[in-house]
Image (cartoon, rainbow, N blue to C red; front, side, top):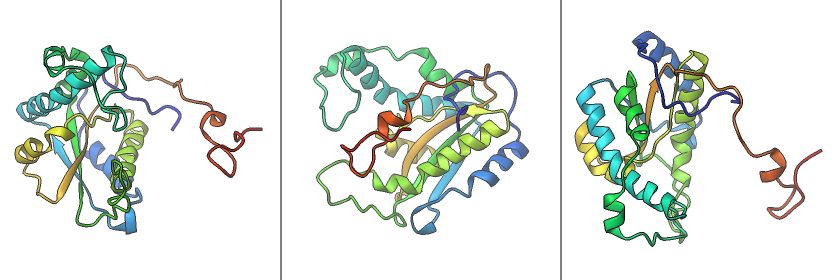
Length: 215
């Protein structure tokens, strides 16, 4: 957990099926709502398909980087963007964003079957997040298992706004929602010191506004 970082640069080493199978075999023990296990992983090696996935992620990335440049929190549900559409359309997406999908030996597309999730927040007046509990632990377990094998990847949700086209590209059924696109490969370097908040910065006692959890 302390050394699994977002790997975006990969060597030319392959990721063999037997290693990938071990990764999945360990990751499958991730929890899901009601243990219904509605997650699905599509393994994509075909270069043309990976190129198309990169293209389908670019539209959301343009807005992301345009908002960053404007000092906004990208895609934030509480703070609508004030960046004009023509500025978004003209924003260049850094090559480093596209290259992991193009150059990784394998790209995993995670989806979740909405017919088996418990979306307890579906009637609240805010963006829903509860259904993610049935798929994102699986994504993280894959990244942890990949780290254990000497591989790594990065977790991207940029293809989600283009879900209909991703569904068509990969033959994903209507009841499945796209949750993440994860390129996996052998990292060119292995980070061992990650920057994260200290426990006391985000854990409190008894109440949200309670005392910091610390010694």
